[in-house]
Amino acid sequence: MFSSPKVYDRPIVVTGATGKQGGAVAKHLLAHGHKVRALTRNPNKPAALALAESGAEIVKGDLEDRASLDVALSDAAGLYSVQDFLEAGVDAEERQGMNLIAAAAASNIDHVVYTGASTMDRNTGVPHLESKWTLEMAVRACGKPWTVFRPAAFMDNWEWERESIAKTGAIYYPMRPDMPYAQIACDDIGRMVALAFEQPGFWANKASPITGDISTMHEVAASLGRVMGQDVAYDQISYVEAGKAMGEELMLMFKSFDELGMDGSPYNLRQWLGDITDFETYLHTAGWGEN
Image 1 (cartoon, helix red, strand yellow):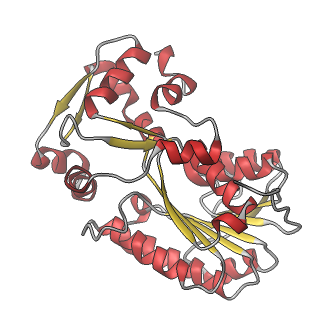
Image 2 (cartoon, one colour):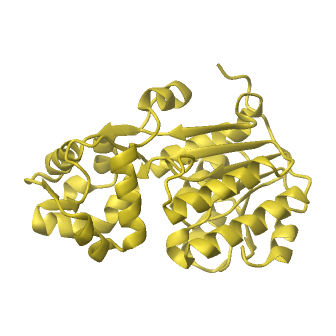
């Protein structure tokens, strides 16, 4: 399926390099021998220092500051773009993404890889999915070879609930118990982004959902219970309760998943990567069995 990996003699700029997705991208690019230029607002934060120890070039930059983006991309070969709506809101996510795309269009880079989210192409009406779709359209129109991945829900996000699940023995969401819930490990997102840069002949100008595991919500709870060594139940709550507990934005996202379904197939991911991370493997690797 794939040819010999492309080798770059210039750095690949990675945004969000101290976060979940960007950190995984930087890790796998470095492991494959690529030069990584990690963009961060704070070069002295522990995650940035750890990247420097791994061989990344750390560059101070801000997605709100176009001039800093132009400098970061000035002699780069590629760009990995990701934005976080949870940190600054949907409007800021879109503004920052557009700044980055404009800088990429004005640069001499060879390839832009952007990660958005599952179902963002379905006219969901969910603000952060709509903003990611707007950014995907801008990436496609930037004049550079591009690749877009639309990852499923992050397995890594269960870390936010580890303590509460151990205490309550339950997970609380508004989706149907039998809804197929698509998930992916951020590490596998990093592997896919590295693959896109290394195989531009296959991946240039393509968009694809990426999913590593599909389980019903009852099955998700059962997997958590098996790994944790305790009973874990799925307790379906109303969308009103969900909105109060998690905020309207996330509630709308889960409602959209419930009504429209989620995208992607582990079969496809396995074809591209070989071994992939299913949910229980992720939980074991992340130490959930040590609670």
